[in-house]
Image 1 (cartoon, helix red, strand yellow):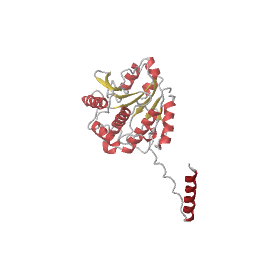
Image 2 (cartoon, helix red, strand yellow):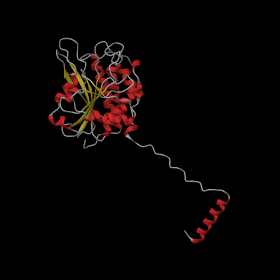
Image 3 (cartoon, helix red, strand yellow):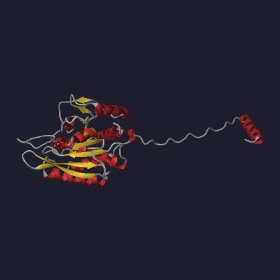
Image 4 (cartoon, helix red, strand yellow):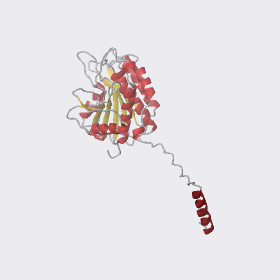
Amino acid sequence: MHPTLRRTAVLLAFLAACRGETEAPPPAPTPRPAVHLLGEGIDVARAMAHLRKLAESPRPTGSAAEARAAAYLEKELASYGYRVERQPVPLPGGGESANVIALPSDPDFDPAEDRHLLTGAHYDTVAGSPGANDNASGVAVLLEVARALGTRPAKLPVVLVAFGAEEGRAGPHHQSLGGSQHYARGMSPEEARHLAAMINLDMVGRGDALLPTLRINMKRGVHQRMLGIAGRLGVPAKEHLTPQVSDSVPFASRGVETAWLWTGVEPSYHSPLDTPEKITPETLDWAGRLTLATIRSFDVND
């Protein structure tokens, strides 16, 4: 600063002090909203719209209604930019169901060569139940997770699968987990080795907490990761150990780390009363935020 200007500045500061004036502090910088995995969620209104569409009628394994639901899911997933395939699932006693598989848009992605994640939810129901919670809730969250990842991909590629035939058909040929077993058994050793984790969404529409669920003697890595992230998100989550099965089990049998989000058995389970008005939208939000945050927590070296 020039000496004359310096003397002028000192004089002005002295006069201001004599008048009791103080220099106003510079304005605080406006905080910039951080793009952070803990702040990302799903569009609950969209999720509820998907749930209501799917729960218009029961979708029993191998039925025409199940096939219509598969077509709806194909259309939605393709609209988000995924390469969508329908994998036929033969049923014991004849007929078939299908898995709807959404692959990353990158044509060079190869699940047998590229480290990746898988997120899944079954879309069939038991006969007579519209299956709003079991499991239109999980599928609705799956679709919203797919849409979010289509807009901003995760560091690891993600395969999304809507499984058919989870409930199985009643009768002498009953077999549950048909779609997930067919997918998991069909993975080559290389594909199983490159699958970092599988996240299963089954019954996430009712309750006052999410239950990251695990069967005894299963690998706990992604399960523990999800519990830790839930704490940072402020999502109510309680670890739950169960003898029950869901679509995560066939993947665990291939040595894959799995996590199952669930809100527990409730009164309308497997009944005609499992309808959309019983759903708590907040639990869908919890499931969506926790699933997205867990997916985004994985790096290429995980």
